Length: 83
Image (cartoon, rainbow, N blue to C red; front, top):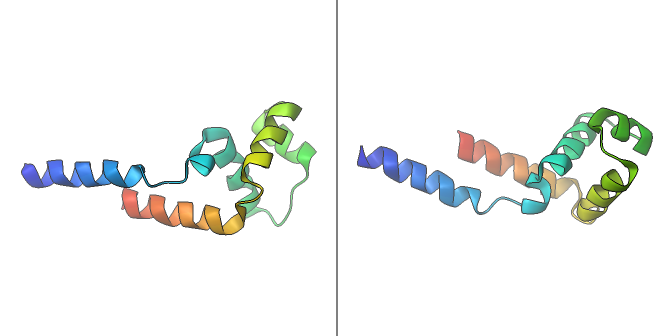
C-alpha cells in the first residue's frame, strides 16, 4: 500500500514540472492541431477550436516563442508521468 502512495506522490510531484503555458487546455488543443498538420491558418484553427479571434490570438501569442521543441518536451513529460 505504501508503494502505491509513493508512486502517486511521485506522479503528482512530476505534474508540477510540466510547462503550464502549454498545459492550459485551449493552448494544448491548438498545439495538438498544429502538431499533426504541416500548416494551418488562423481561420482553420478558429473553426476547429471554437475560440474567438481575440482568444485564439492571445493563446497563440503566449506560446509563439516556445516553439515545437517545448511541445515535444511536454509530450515526453506527460508520457513519462502517465506511463
